[in-house]
Image (cartoon, rainbow, N blue to C red; front, top):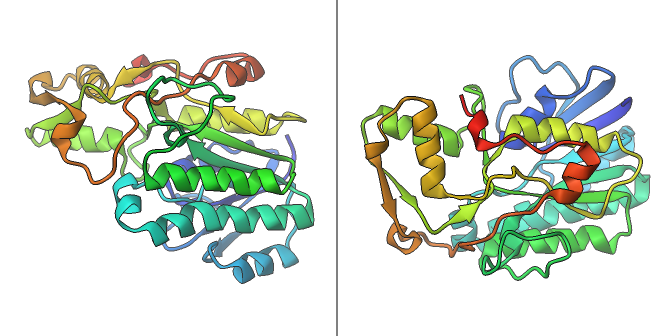
Length: 289
């Protein structure tokens, strides 16, 4: 693949790995809002608020890109539930602004959604299954999908699921939370009735670059690991791989955690379409080291 690619939200968990996994044949630029970009990134960098349409328009009036990979967005499900304005701005408005600019400048837009657009009753889900979000985070992700669909673009919304990173330089994430809790000899409470496909973000980023190189992509694509397991089983798997004490992992029900936002208990994604395009599955949880 060649061309010019802009990665937005490039300081986050997914965006930082998208930068790190970029092929050498691509010229990559990046945007961030407040956080620093990964060490070693030498491409053009822009600091701006993607929620402001004027700022987005100014950026693209001076630069041309073949592809924009949008990794910006809210990932804190509970904060979204207690701050709806924040959720709408970071999940819907940013995507709307980019979709409108993509229509004008005719670049390919890749953005990311979530398995939380589903209600979690009959998961894991295929792409044609009907969305029915049960929390604010999921609703704003679905609104973002609708913004992209309305513009009739060369675009792909990639739904992802339960991202984690084994890279020690990655932003704080589920893997590190579990690791630090157990390393501190503290109890980690994990729900055994919250199921998903935990997906290693470096492997995901590599797959995204493979997909971008393809001439045509579906409007909606599911991309997650083949493992469909509970949060409790994930924590135990991590502990075993790191030779840590699994007795510190307390099996609980989701309701026992008292979280502000409801979770779809059996969400998750079936990624057969993406696997066929890639010619491979994403890595299993057994790949944890």
